[in-house]
Image 1 (cartoon, rainbow, N blue to C red):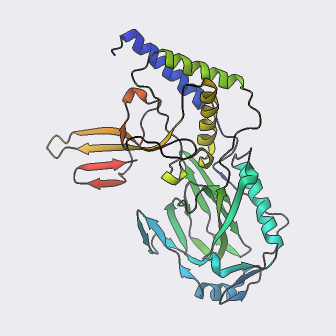
Image 2 (tube, rainbow, N blue to C red; image 1 turned 135 degrees about the vertical axis):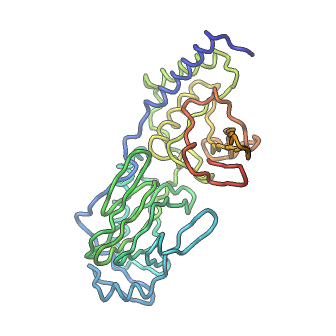
Image 3 (cartoon, rainbow, N blue to C red; image 1 turned 120 degrees about the vertical axis):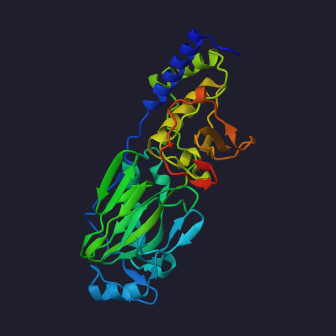
Amino acid sequence: MSLSSDSSDDFSDLKDAVSEQISRVHSTGSFATFGTVKDFVLPGISVDGVGDLRLPLSEDDAHILAKASCQAPFGKGTETLIDESVRKTWEIDARSVHFLNEAWQRSIDGIVERAAAELGITESRRCVRADFYKMLLYEKGAMFKPHRDSEKLSGMFGTLVICLPSLHTGGAVCLHHGNKEERFETKFLAHSMKKVEPVQEGYRWVLTYNLIHDSRDQAPSASILDARTRDFMQSLTQWQDSQPRHGYLVWTLDHKYTKAGLELAHLKGDDYHRVRHAVLSYTAHGEIFVMLANMELCVTSQNDEEGEESSELYLRHIVDTDGFQLSLPDGVPIAEDALLQTVFGTERDPDQQGGGEYLGN
C-alpha cells in the first residue's frame, strides 16, 4: 500500500495526536521520596555472632559489627564482583539479623504505606510490602559508585532504606532518573540510577528492604470513562480508520525493565499510569490491544575506511499486560513510521559488543 504526500501528512498528524494523549498522562508521585520518622520505634536488633546492639550505634559496637560482616559485592552483567574502587561497604545477610521488638514490623508497614503513596501508588498501596534484605555498614571512606538495584524478587519495584541512629557525616545518596536528580541523607526510593557518596566521619548504618507489589489488578474502583479517555479513544479510532501500513504503534517507556518486570503491576511512575490509561481506553475501544516488550537497538558498523553504520530496532520478549509471553517471534523488527517518539540510546555505550557490531537495548 502506497501513501500520497497528503495522506502521509494526515497519518503523521494522527500519530502526533495519539502521542500527545499518552504524554498528558502523569503519575501523581515522585521517582524517589525522603522522610524522617518522628516516633521512632526501637527495633531491638540482634545479630548472630554479635548479640544485641544498642542505638545509637557506638564506635565499639561498630567495630564488632564490621568484624562480623562480609564485604558487599555488586553485579556487572552476569558476574558478581568485589572491588572496593566501585563499592566499599560491609554487609550482613537478613538471615543473621533479628528484630526483637514486635512493634518494629508495624512501624515498617506504616513507612511503606506512606512511601507507596508518595511514589504515586495510590489505588492499591496496601498490596505493597517490604521484605528485609540486608544490613549495611559504611565506615569512613565507604561508598558505592553509580548503580541500579537489580530486581531480586517477582514484583519488586524499588528499595526502601532505613538509616538507623549512628553519628556520621557524608554518605549522602544521589539519585538520577532521566534529567531529574535528588540528593538524600536518608530515603525511600524507587528503582533509579544512584550512588552513595563517601562517608567522611563515623558510621552510616542502614537496613535495606525490597519493595514488592503483590497485586496484579491495579484498576481504579470506577469504570466511568473520563473526557481524557474518550479523547484517546477518538484518536485511536481515527488512526485505525486511516488504514496504517503497520497495524501497531510503539511508545517507549521512561524506565528500563527486565523480562521479570514487564507487566502492568510492576511498572513505575508515569509508565504505570500511561499503560493503565491505554489499557482502559483500548478495552473500551474493543479492537486494539496493549503489549509490553523490550526494545533493542542494533547498530552495525562496517569495517572499512568510510566507517558507515546501519541500525535496526527490534521488539523482544513480547508479553501481555499480565506478563504472559505471547506466541510471537523473538526479534520483531520495528518500522520507523510506527514509532511515536524519537529513538533514544544512540549516545549510550553498547550493552554488548562483538567485532564491528554493537547492541543496545
